[in-house]
Image (cartoon, rainbow, N blue to C red; front, side, top):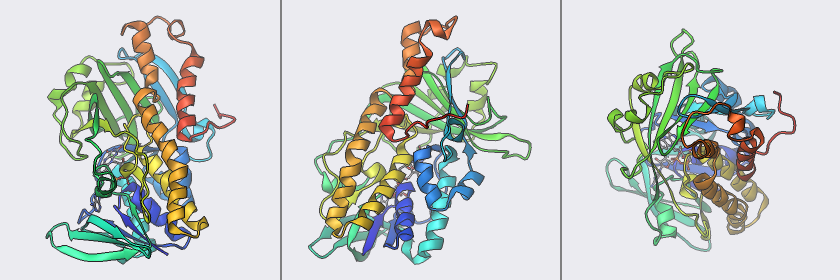
Length: 412
Ligand SMILES: Cc1cc2nc3c(=O)[nH]c(=O)nc-3n(C[C@H](O)[C@H](O)[C@H](O)COP(=O)(O)OP(=O)(O)OC[C@H]3O[C@@H](n4cnc5c(N)ncnc54)[C@H](O)[C@@H]3O)c2cc1C
């Protein structure tokens, strides 16, 4: 059996490594001619890092990331609402990685080239479509730079890991509408900063109506003096947004006003934002879950299958879990078509639930509750606003929906 993987992003490369591990041949085709370390920060939760550990990547990932220890939630006045342990500090066997997407991508790409061979990870090949029959599937490609047609490629199965703008998804569901804008625009950047709180804290503060920040470190000691690379995302309700593009530059003036007075004793937020060399802009969009992903020998994986709001650190993680499920299905099912169907049966409903939950009740629903109950005012005692158990139940519900089952005995 041989599998064609379209897209050498996080999902496609994880799938390639997983298939190689179980002895199934794969070839990866990526449209970008020279893969560069793009993006900003990303989180990999324990249910996904477990899969990366099985692929033998734990040591390398630990070297280039921050092992996240806690989540901390604040209001826009810098008052602590709630904190809880994360990753190994919460008792999981596997860590939560906070990592530059480019660093994660590099680790996966280097491993895929080393294990599959450079001739099986081809860059500059843009997939334009496919055809299939009873015996196999043929993918069509263009040379990304020159635009010329590349030779068709034939195999037993094709997995579309081609991300948000998936051409295969469009082929399978041509009538699907445009991405759905949430009403929230995001500005993202990375800044060199002294460690904040524990130096391994994932911070969420404020609320979308008046401005929300997500802040977490993604690399340690980047200057030899203990400073970290800190990822931040500013999120703000506004009708103003542009088409989703991971590399679109953003402008400070469009959002800094919402955070200008966020000078806390634990962090000067506007100073941190201004320290970023580059600001990227991205709209919070998703798409309604699809009714099906698989047609014969072709299926979807990762963002191509289930684009979701980045509100629960699950975009990359769910692509990684998809890859594992597909490997298991291909290893245990004789017919390719049946294997792809079994994978879809296992993953579609689960990921659809996460897409919906990211719209309504991701972990930052904690911030919404406090915003609404306080009327966006400082509080005297958080216990008078909301009970600790109610806050804990919000994150626990999300963990159950996303497959990050809470460990029995948290270590602190
Ligand atoms: C440049 C870039 C920057 C990103 N930055 C961030 C970030 O800062 N933070 C964050 O949370 N998420 C980011 N993401 C998204 C994140 O990687 C995904 O949400 C998540 O990892 C799911 O992975 P995926 O493999 O489904 O998609 P992706 O990781 O997006 O990978 C899709 C891959 O398919 C390739 N591709 C697309 N069309 C074709 C085609 N027709 N033929 C061949 N190949 C094709 C793309 O070039 C890409 O390499 C970024 C994605 C990209 C591509």
